[in-house]
Length: 280
Image (tube, rainbow, N blue to C red; front, side, top):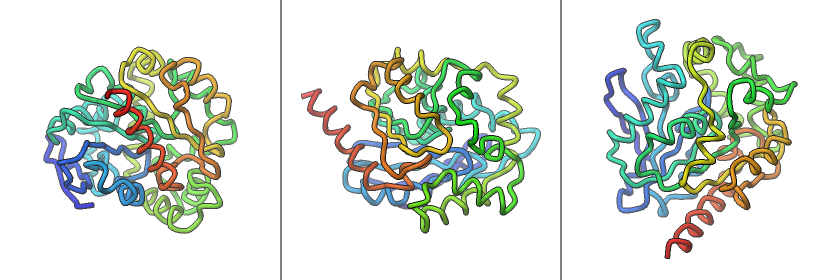
């Protein structure tokens, strides 16, 4: 994947691309304290099938760290939705799919009414809810959720979080990538996203997903350290488009594309092929 930058009003936004514009476009969105580089193995598995673009949200990866308090809004959910729409326009995407993990999937779901040209949405290890209280009711009581939103991580925090994000059986390269992303992410991002949660309206993602005509696929981890297992059954009931398209991978926690890239790639390819078959 080649390194590229978008010059937006708020600064430089980094992305990785295989530059295969002759293929169907698939935009990859990471979660909190992660990065576009977390998609490297998935990109290798999907190369030759998609025009891959992995975006670094501001404050993550190689995108700019923003000035506080002047640019604080850009670190809010509303600001990130605005950024996603602007990035898609700047990338010239008019016919594309999105695969998004955790926070990235929340941003994509909330932005659905503005994502013109979106052909499919793949949600990975994300909680979708009718509001803030509903969201947190689906989080496991013993999950290190508060730690994941601390402005400053010490090495003990990074170890705790990496062990939660990554299944123990995936220790090694996925652990190292996750730990590096945690160290390098901007603590101001987490501080501001928490602050704005109390100030901004929380969109009903369940209603947005259920009303959408965009085909959906959900890929989660059977051993997710953050998500209560009952959530998956509830989501399938609330969003009919996920009937038969909600997959839980074994020995996977909260970052499926980093923990089991090959299984994610197979699921994405099968989903894309099924959509092509339905359209023909």
